[in-house]
Image 1 (cartoon, rainbow, N blue to C red):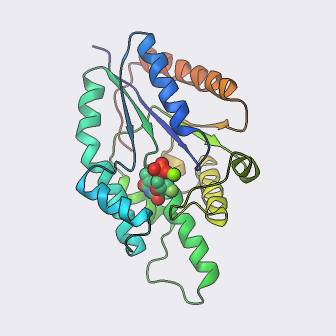
Image 2: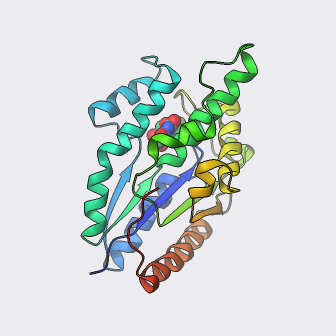
Length: 229
Ligand code: FDM
Ligand code: MG
C-alpha cells in the first residue's frame, strides 16, 4: 500500500509558510489525498504551553532548556506522524526541526557578539541538531526564503520573542548555511529546496506544487519508505 508523504514548510516569520502550507493541503485534498496539517510549536500540549509562555515573554528559560522543549514538542508528535504516513495520509508541517536548529543557533550568534565570555555550551549547529536526530524525515522541505526588506514591506513583525530584525537576519543566515549543506543538519537535509518567497502568492504556490509533484513521483517510483532524520 502507498504511504503518505512528509512535507515541511520552513522559513522566516512573514515568509508565507502558513498560507502556503494550507493552500497545499487544499490542493492535495482536491486531488483526493488524505492530508493532516500540523504546526510546530504545537502550543496546545503541556510542553507547548511552556513554549508559548516563553515566546510571549511571560517566562524565561535557559537557551538549552527551551531548545530541548521545542524538540520534545516534536517527539511527542512523532508516533502520530508515523502512523498517519503508514495509513497513507500525507502530513504537511508548518515548521519542523530546521526551525529548531536555525533559531537556537542564531540566538547563540547574537549572544556571542554581545557577551565577552563564551557560555559553557556554545549551542553549535551540531549540538542544536542532535535532539531531533531520529525524527521522521521529511520527503521534501520547502524553505520559503524572504529578504528582510521584503519582510518589512509585508508589515514587519509581531511582538513575540524572536520577531526582531537582527534575530531574523541571523536565522536567515543559518537556514542558508544548512541549505548549503553545512554540519550534520546540512548533510542529513536531503530534499531541502529553496523557494523565493518574495514572488507573488500564486507564483510561489506554483513552484511549491511543482516540487511536491516531483517528490511524489520519485517516492512512488523508487518505492522509498519513511526515513528517519
Ligand atoms: N521556533 C520554532 C523555535 O525557536 N524553535 C523551534 O523548534 C520551532 C518549531 O518559535 F519564532 C520559533 C520560530 C518562531 C516561534 O513560531 C514561533 P510560529 O510559527 O511563529 O508560531
Ligand atoms: Mg511567528
